[in-house]
Amino acid sequence: MDVRAVSPVALLLAVGLNCAGCAAAGETTPVVLTTEYALRDDMRQLWAAQATWSRVVIVSTVAGLEDTPAATDRLLRNGSEIADAFRPFYGGPAAYRLHALLNDHVTGLREVIASTMAADNAGLEAARTLWYANADELARFLADLNPNWGYYELWRMFRTNLDATVSETMARVGGHWDVDVTAHDAVVSSTRPIADGLADGITMQFPELVTDRTFTSVRERDLHVSMRVLFEAQVSWTRFYLIDALAGLPSTPETTARLVRSGDDLADAIRQIYGATAADRLTTLLDREVEILGDFVSALAEGDRQAVAGAIGAWYRNATEIAAFLASLNPVWSFVALETQLHEQINLTSDEATARVRAEWESDVVAYDLAVVHILNLSDVIASGIAQDLPPPAPQQ
Image (cartoon, rainbow, N blue to C red; front, side):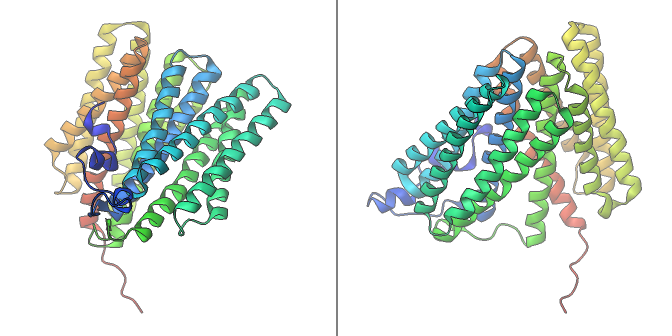
């Protein structure tokens, strides 16, 4: 996979930086590995990917889509990447054990899906019992690694995540599409305290390996975090829309509505800074983007090359309008840079959709992973610009 799709901690490993686990074994001297923000962000991206690829496995399995094995492999690889994020701090044996537990987690998910589809209540109860036991084992393992991670708190967070995933699976099987969307949003929300708790625990346990300052203020840091949440929702719901629409699944209207709402959320993020008129204008442009995406998908599914080219042209023009509009709001945002980034996001989404139509599942996975990395880079650009326009903090009493 392209190096841009590799997590920051994995990149540190690739260039051979020393690690706490190795130092504990007397092999090397630990060095600073990362920043508090980068570690938190890396954990968030890994656990967000866990939620995304779990959903793809659920959707594809329930619908009997051909990409199910590729989606399952990608979910399994995400467990390996989570384990790799722990390796610099806890060493190889701990990472290996964590990887094994996360593999078992995927097995449990597949059994929950299968028993739900079979309407086997006894089988579902047995599958859930084993799945929750795996989460209990995972919580105990992590609590033993780090005194800052309490077993009961970890278990509670994992249990919340599993409950939401079960609800998502049952809604998907039952065709309750509104509930399905709400349940997935709950799954994603449940991953954030897990990721943040793990990152905070590592930072506290290994202060010599994690620097504590990246941004000039907590507000700037929080702005970057919140913008990444919004942009990641945009790219993930675009993927879910592509899966549903290209397969002609009955959940497509609800998925489309959720994608539109993710654009509305992005527009609302600038409302307090740039006003209602600006937010409404961005809403209109992002709504149009979803409409054009629908035209593109329809043309692609029908094999109408002329219509595909027309949709992509309209897509580019709308992106250019977005770039020009944003550049007019803030001098930090370069029109040329934004236009280039937005056009590249279209290219990656087009690659993703085209790979799905051609049943090139590995290319589909790679295109999506690159789309995530790219849109998060765009998110950081937007957040940096907004940070320049934040009103001064209120004076402390």
